[in-house]
Amino acid sequence: MKNLPLLFLGIFFTLAFSWVGLVLTSHLNLGNLGPTTSSLDDEGNALEGEQLYPIKLGGIAKTGKQIYIDQGCMYCHSQQVRPKGFGADYERGWGDRQTVARDYIYQERVLLGTMRTGPDLANVGARLSSVDWHMNHLYHPRITSPGSIMPPYPHLFEVRKIEGYDSSEALNIPENSPYAPPDGYEVIPTDRAKALVAYLLALKVDYELPEMKFSEIE
Image (cartoon, rainbow, N blue to C red; front, side):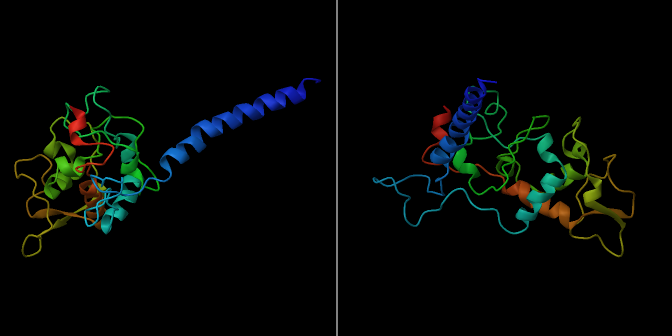
């Protein structure tokens, strides 16, 4: 046991160097990131009067993020467009630029995802901007994407008998679809479905940052 102090010091310095490398260095490099404009002035400051990016989630989209988590969407979908040359994100049209650290500064819980069973969603609100498309896709993915292996989420909708006239909120499912409701019935999104779609539509990387321009993907 005479080497116990030496062993203790070895463990201590191993943990200390790991903490400095993984936590402290990352915090010093990224912890002061804030919103900024797409371009900077000559002194490196945000341009006055121009839109700051990224934009905070607002309204029911904030609720929709929690529903996204509750439904386990991040287990099949990532939210990270990789650099060109790392995978086929650009070829698949998942984003016009790679995502960078500043894109996530407002996210208390960053949902990068754990695997890619489905498409990356970092920019889904820009490339698929139709509310109808997302509603139908959530109710049953094969309405919009034949052959999709994504599970349906009918529990986020209500199938109800039409009383008098169709609801303005009813899903526009093609009548010949095997997933259309029976005659005399309609599918209505619940508040959870509306919030989740609002969140998906808010996922956009359609802006440039000083450290990442669209032109840099070429």
